[in-house]
Image (cartoon, rainbow, N blue to C red; front, side, top):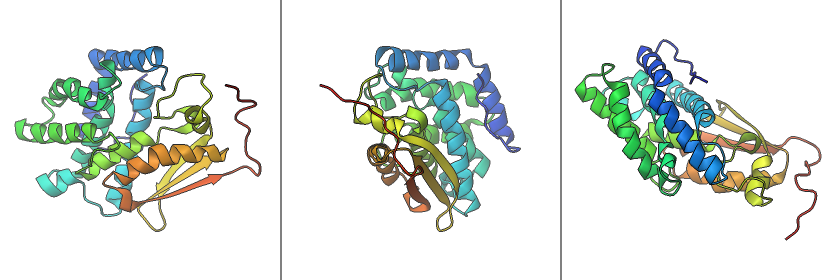
Amino acid sequence: MPINVPTKHNKKLEQLVERINQDVELHQLWKCVNINAVDRSGISDHGEVHIRIVANVALKLLRLLVDAGIEPNVVKNYGLTNDDAEVVVVLAECLHDLGIAIHREEHEHHSLILAAPKLKELLDGVYGVEERTIVTCEVLHAIIAHRWDVPCLTIEAGVVKVADALDITEGRSRIPFETGQVNIHSVSAAAIDSVTLKRGEVKPISLEIAMSNSAGIFQLDELLKRKLRNSSIADYVELVARIEAETEKRLVKIYTY
């Protein structure tokens, strides 16, 4: 399936998405990622489905910030445009987990090895040498900074980190857990029903998390909140989590050891 994002007249982004969708090597790398993630490690999908979700989330986060007057760092530090910031976040999301094709452990560092030559291919002809170098560095920074404890030095990196953490609905946790195991990771992942992302009333971004069971709080504490705290956009996000039903959904009938 192709990667589809709303390009909104961003010609560079439109061109890059077209290149990404025609890149046989990149699509095979995503398949290799899921072989190591899903088939060999028993953790959640980190391949094409994940990429489609987080690329769209990141783009929406960035546009909400820009609409609120928050300046992306490629604009502030290099004099590029908001369109270029969109290129950075989408490319970073497309390439951030490539390192899992090598190993899940320290995959953020492994991703840099595979992403750097791929960026040169994708950006060639879209940018001149100087701008291509800037965009490459910004994308690689966002990739390494998507690890929860690595500081984000740019708005774009913060967007990438938080978007990655928001792929948590219907059991799609970013926290590793073995498929079929009954534990706090699997139970809390099943408790997240939906994530709604919209313009906030007090802050530029509002995140509303609907849960079927209070076990979902573990997901928010262990994944979303710690990534948000270590991002560059924490001050611009308001987070609300609610249990929608009057009674909590039973997630486990019986637990034995």
